[in-house]
Length: 357
Image (cartoon, rainbow, N blue to C red; front, side):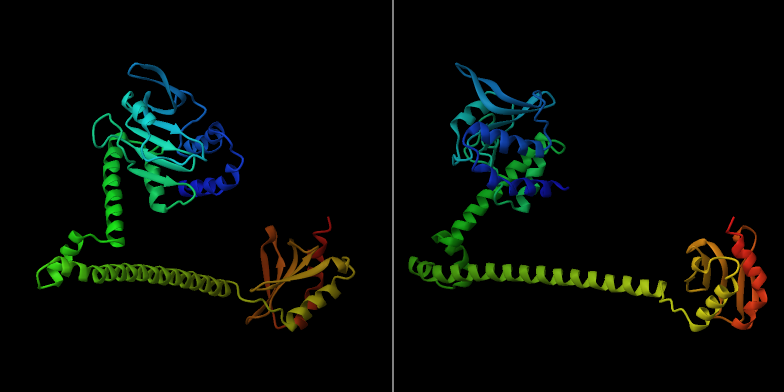
């Protein structure tokens, strides 16, 4: 199972579990530790996932952070846990103090549902006031899972993650600014567009007049982009479905070509019943049956393909009666039709008796 499937499977059970979690400890054991396990960390190894990790903060000795993840013998990630019922604040003073007193480069603030990731992009060894990344397990997005996967034990690399953190931080801030401008554009934002679409002077009145126009244009543009994306997704889905149908049709056609329908002719049935009559004194006729194939009709004993008495090749010219030879090889005899079969009564009886032991 892929990481994203494992994560979604885990998240699907959170809603039913959390109503039974009444304490922070219950949240840790039921939600947070399994999450760390999904990330590849051995929660049963106290040298890798250290509970109640002791941190000396200034004059305060013996401060404890809920968990510390150690990589190569050094603390790499500090985790401050809250109850799932507690809403998370953007800034946590307690986690800020812990971070400054260790060599860990990353910190997580979580209530078992929302996970906020921090580092020290603004000032070395001082936790940033805002997270560079967060993921809500009750609203998982594929893009967020791709970033979370970089914190998996097998992929963890502090230096590259620090670069990723910077990129995520600025992208996050850019999205916030863009969202705010689209919702309620400020004057500078309107002025940026006016210089290309308005030949007059960008007075305050012009800015106020153009603000609803530009806001409407931006929203229409975004809606058009979304519609194009949906149409493309639908077309891709249709094309994929059609491709699967075409492949199924081709496979069915190939099967039909490879395995044509077998039709037992009247002549073949006549030959079978004639052999059955000729053998009635040599073997119990109830044991005699036939099996038709695309090439020949075989007369068998006990419906066992290895106990074949004879084979008829009647759909070709010349026609053949085949009798068992040494090592079950075929001795083919040319016949003109069913009327020639009684000429080989003795050979047929000997072939049948050979299986009677």
